[in-house]
Length: 437
Ligand code: ATP
Ligand code: MG
Image (cartoon, rainbow, N blue to C red):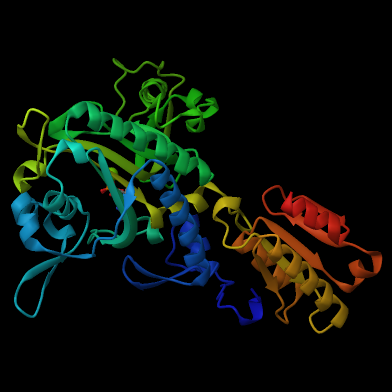
């Protein structure tokens, strides 16, 4: 991509309305534009990151054997009346009336709709287990939208739903999602802690929130600092085999992680316990027959008995993750994207636009990188070097490759690694080898 023809409206000034660093950096890096309170337009650079996150989330859901579908954003109020949530949801639900005076709503979540779809087609235990998910915009009329997309009103969520004929099978579905979440956050470069969450009237231990630690987080967290050093690899787990063993082990390790801290039951001594703040990036929940019963989603068991299907739901805040990743990975100069979600892999800085030789070297590097599968943002704007360096640091691409006439004469380009800050003068070939290596 040539920056001179791209749409990257970076800002020099720090926007006054942004209270936290991720929001400030997203505005300054030209990633999003607020269009109403808690509602954002995603500009090209922001959208590129959002899409990359979405893709990792999708790949890990598919790997866990869950099937993607796409449900609409606008739902009929009737389904929500059947489940009893239409009145209960309160002012967070955006209610809409269509031209025929039918009550509609902008979906804040999809349990009712997915249960309705399920019951239309699935009648027997033979068709279970089944997992369905989609990645779709949600609307919740939050009383205090803030922190950019972190607490928006319109936001992108991955929500998955599991259907099983008994509670044991449902527990296995839950455990698989637990592993899929650890894999997903690992690929996103985040250390996410599974924290036991309230299960409400259903009880049991089958609800976890996935939290990343950040000073600006809205949730209070108590955790055992030892978890930070744990080498707990979700990649060792085989979905067909030892999921339950891993789940038991992992949840024991994180047993001290909680929103409330009760010294009487906490396995970690009070003086080593870490009290911190965190951002909820995901939430998984087993709720049994809470929706299948009122909506009449029944399946036949082998003995012929018709029972309500056992369900769970599994959310990831895809758009919240953009801000959460920045909260976890930035410095004074700007964003530092993990490779896996960077909008481009390499930023190419042409120090002397208009110089034929410099342009030729840039074009050659650009072509070779793109051919090898590394996406490149070529800063070919007629701007001062200082502006280009500052913008590149701000938008946080993993590598910066600087090309100018002086270096060309000496047979070198400058390669900077954004995260470590290390800079080296290298031949073009060595620089490419390092980037692609
Ligand atoms: P919170 O406690 O932060 O309000 P929640 O518990 O209401 O979230 P869930 O219903 O569990 O949210 O939704 C699943 C995921 O969607 C959350 O873990 C979070 O990452 C994301 N999410 C929820 N509300 C918002 C919001 N207003 N803006 C952005 N992301 C959100
Ligand atoms: Mg939640």
